[in-house]
Image (cartoon, rainbow, N blue to C red; front, side, top):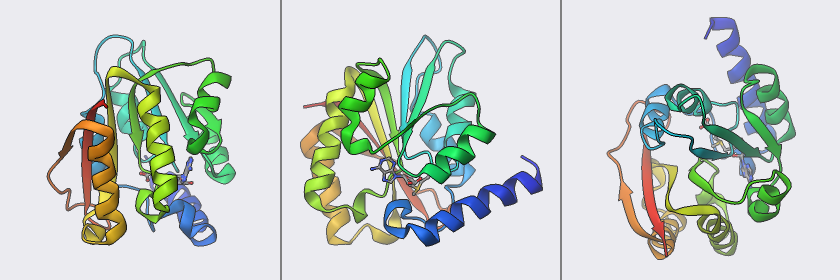
Length: 200
Ligand SMILES: C[S@@+](CC[C@H](N)C(=O)[O-])C[C@H]1O[C@@H](n2cnc3c(N)ncnc32)[C@H](O)[C@@H]1O
């Protein structure tokens, strides 16, 4: 990505983060190091259907796109219309659905999908109230194929907060297997990727 394009990405992200801090939930886009760790989780062969929740300016989308095979169906649900506009202009290969992931079932029906093989989420879970977290995660679990995988990014700076602890407990309630990967220090703030399989 050119310097100019990077600047455009950062300006878009930071502007939305300042205007909608509770929805964006981060000060900067996720680093390429986290993006690589996340992308390892999606299938590199076959024709997987892969859904991103909260792509923002697409910091994870590029790494996913590179990893996915040519026949993959890669699409994303983003709530912020400015982010959607930015993505449509810069990542034309990404199919976008503007909407709230909390209504995932309805959004998938409208987009003519039923189930997905992987959900990659970087929405700010720990800023959400417990009932919203539960509702959203239930929608994700319903949308996944039995062998599907859910992955999400949290920040190590918030690991000991009550909301984060509640969220990781909820992950364990929702999935049979919840694997925290090692901390990615090269991110602001340092991040932890969770990989979850087998919705209960
Ligand atoms: C922390 S940013 C992550 C952006 C990008 N994936 C990255 O890693 O840099 C969270 C993104 O989730 C979006 N978002 C928050 N709540 C959402 C929801 N309920 N449905 C869809 N997108 C949501 C925000 O607008 C924002 O783009």
